[in-house]
Length: 452
Ligand code: S3P
Image 1 (cartoon, rainbow, N blue to C red):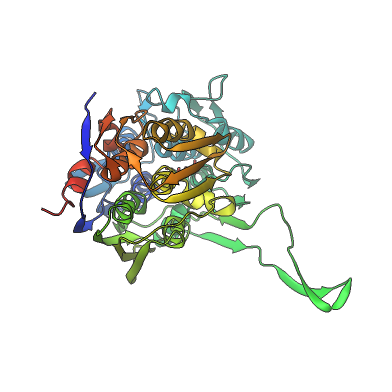
Image 2: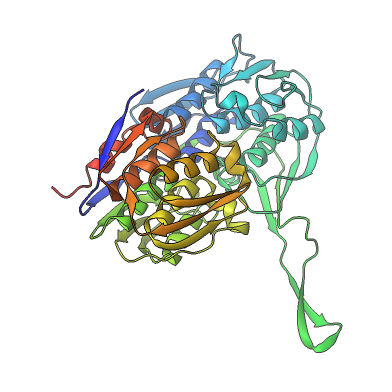
């Protein structure tokens, strides 16, 4: 149970390259099972989570060669084979949910398990639609793993997602891809679109259609115009029409915007700081943190926009400046869901009240992140009120160093290590090793930014 001590910092300065994006790395690893030729992944995420996806690929007959952050994957020669042992997804919800789609669509028999946290996370959200596709998949009575999948052939589905989740969407798209069945997923709120982009990058066919409002004369007052939507049940339709296996190729993974968020926030709360982060993913379904941080007054410049393996990337320059609160709620939530713990730390470090709502999903992540933020910010002397779906944070501009519990959750450990940089005295992160799930070198990278 390693502890890390973080002391209040003076200026932070540096030039950093971010580890590969976790969401994209998982997808590249798992999708290799459905390709015709080898996949080479560059800048593969180095955390424990994506290692779980690689092990799953191996257990299903895929070839895995790893050389630092380069991974070469050979698809199983005669299709995915049923594993003899349960597949252990560790702490990784993305591995479990995306893999289950592939397994359900591949007609194999498999059991999927995870660590204590993952075995308590909701799986009914994928089991229900997969069963609508005729898959023989079973969760426990409580709707959690182990998941048992038996051979069977799946049928097409047209599904309006009741929860805004890229993991559900991706699970179903991959079930369609693996089985050669058309799948349509309709989203009420837009979620990250890495699966769609990667399938298209590898020669597959995912169509994305947005509901665009029509402007018509207002029947009550013909001098005015009115916006009408064809439906308010969903905003985007995503459909896959599979045509055999995908091509192989090279996937260069952009730096992880979710990891970049901790460093950006650190520079925003430590006076005099200036950082440049290279090669960060700025996909519009993942970049709301940058927009909110700017609206809070963060001096953030996005430079050298370019495309990498079907994903937009850029370099990000952050300079310390005064901050002010803003409300965070509604349609932007799925776009910054993983960044809410660090946004809470930003809120605590500025004067004024920040309200974060519509984020009930935080209760179902690697820990109950609403509880974890409330407890830890409370320990740092911040007044914070808890809602079922968020919190209200009353910042005074002062944070006290404190003993922090990571709740064995990487994002909580990293967010509060950043808080420690602005805290008076010292902050002790308990169970600090949780950070290795997405960024094994996190504390060294953070400490390396102190001006010597
Ligand atoms: C992820 C989607 C999000 C996110 C998770 C990674 C993905 O989860 O919180 O860290 O890679 O698809 P949900 O889709 O369940 O919201």
